[in-house]
Image 1: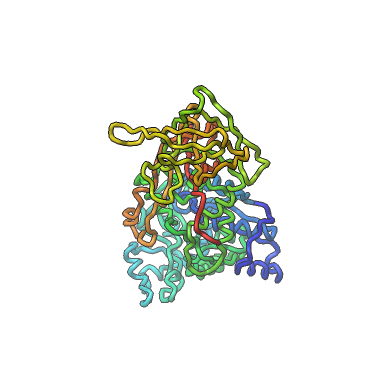
Image 2: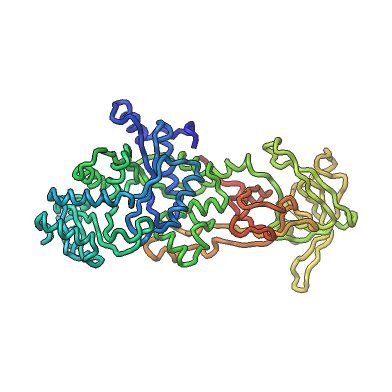
Length: 551
C-alpha cells in the first residue's frame, strides 16, 4: 500500500510519535501474526491495515508471522490463503516468519526459566489445574508439583521433549503467583505435549509452546517495537511482559491493545466460521455470504473499499459494533466510478413489439458509465422481441405504479416508448407474454418532447441475450446477538441465498471472473470466479444501488 495512505490520528499513532521523538526507537517494527487455523475475515483486515499502515507511515517495517504453535488446528492451506489475502489488500511484508521456526530457542528459554526456579513440570490433570487455579473472587492454591527441585524439573522436561509421556500427562507451568488477582499469572501453562505432525516442523517436536508464552518471545526475537493486538489480550499483557523479562530477551516489545472490529449480522469467530463450512451451511470459506476476505473478494468487494472501511472505523479502546451498511457504502463509492453499466433481466417476461419490423435489429448507443464519459459507449441491439422484468408489469396495478400495465406507456432505457396493448396468459392464468407497440419518434437522444412518460424500464433484446445465473445474497446471520455457543447455527438465515436465471446484454459474452458491473436498477454485481465457465455466466450481487446509510 502506498505510504501516502496514512492512518488518522489515534492513541497508538500518538504513542509511536512519542517513542520516536524520545529516541526510544529509531525504527518502527510491527507484525501481523495470524494463527493458520482458518481463513482471514474482515476483522483481521482491520489489524492488517493498522499494523501495515502505521509502519508505512513512519517508514518502518511489518512482518507477516504465522503463530503456528497448535498443530492439531493448523494447515498449510490456511498459510497460503492468508498470504494471498494480505497481498490482495495491497500490502507487502518485510519478512515472512513462522513461530515454529523459533521452537528451539523457545525450548532453551523454557530451560532457562526452570534453571531460574521460574518454571516447573506439572503432574495434575487439566481439570485439577483448573480447580487449583481458583476464581476471580478466590485465590488459587499451589500444586504439589510446584516445589520440585530444579534438577527434577529439568529431567522431566527433557523426558517430555523426548516423547516419554502421553498427551496430557505432563505440562510445563511458569511459576509466578497463585494468589494474583490476574488469573493469567496463576502459574500459566507454557508447554504441553502433543504427539502430532506439524505442517512446518513435521514430527521433530512432540511438545509445543502455549500462545501466551510463545507470542512475546516471537515479538522479541524479531525486534518488534509495538505489538498491536485486540483488547481481549489486555489481561495477558502482564504475562507478556513477564515472559520477555524473565526469559532475558534483548528486545522489549510494547503490547498495545485496541478494540476489535465488530460488524452487524457478522460472525467474527474462526471457530464458528469453520462450523458453517464443515456443516455445509455455505459452500466453502470463500462463499460470498462469509465475512472472510476470500468470501468478500469472490462476492466482488475491492481491496480499496475494505482498506478505506477499516481506516474510517477508527481506532479506539471501547467496544462498539459497526453497521454493515458502512462497508457497503464504501464498495458503492469505489465502484460507481469504475464499474461499467449495463442491463440485465433477472426474472424475464417476454415482450413482443408488434409494429417493429420483423427481422430488423437496430443498434443503439449508450454510455458505458454516465459519470465517467471517457469510458466511452457501448452498443445495444433492439429487435421485435425483448425481455423485461416480471416486476415491471402489472395487470391490475395500484395507484402511483408507473411501469408497464395495459394501456400504459413507458420508456425502454436507451430506446423508445412502448405501450402495452395485449396480455397473453397460459392455461393456469399466468402472464407469459406482453404485446406492445412502439413509437419510432421517441428514440432516446433525439430530443423528442411531444409527450412524457413517468416510467423507464430496462430490458434485454431476446435473440442475442446471454443467459446468466444471478446469486442474490441476504445476511447469513439473522441476529448476531443471539449467536451464542453452538446454538448460533439455529440463527442462520435459511433465505440468505436466492438463485435466479435471466439474461444480460450480449456485450457480457466472454466476461471473466472478478469482472464488476453495475446492472441498471439491480445493483453492483461480480462475475463469480468459482462457477463461471465459457458456457455459463454466474453473477454475484455485491450490493444494491442505494442505501439509507449516512457517514
